[in-house]
Length: 114
Length: 110
Image (tube, rainbow over the protein chains, first blue to last red):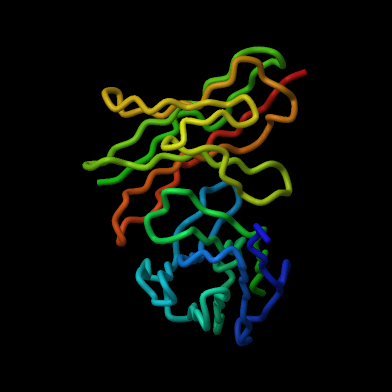
């Protein structure tokens, strides 16, 4: 298995809802990442997990809450989002934090906040 | 400060013509450099990395430390090369992050 799988592919949520995005990989990668990508823009880093521990939080608002239950899974819990949070949310993984081999990206969850 | 600059937002090239996508970087140590590609409606994927000195889909990129550049080249463009290309940079330390350039959209004209 050489893929990063993200579910759901599409999500529409209201500003008072609570939802979660899920990311899974079975490549034995020990670093996992959440990125946010707006249309026609490069991905922006949100969080980095290295060996299941949060190592980087790019000053992301607390309405986004990451979780890494084990080395294969990464979740992003969403609560009280704003319409400007609508974007493509990408998960990625790499062998380890050194990133020498680059990232493997998932296909993303397209989130719309209404 | 780490920075990746891709000066062209859009590059249009005729099929069969040579392609060069420019990337310049700013980094105080020894960077790891990558090119990522995003085809229409597909996921972002790694195209090549400087450390492996490989050629993927006919593309090559050479790290020029003197000019701090990592330009992506292909001698003969193909229509299937039309995509968004991102140059990216990272260090080798635990707290280093991959920084992406703003991207260049490559449009191959028939």
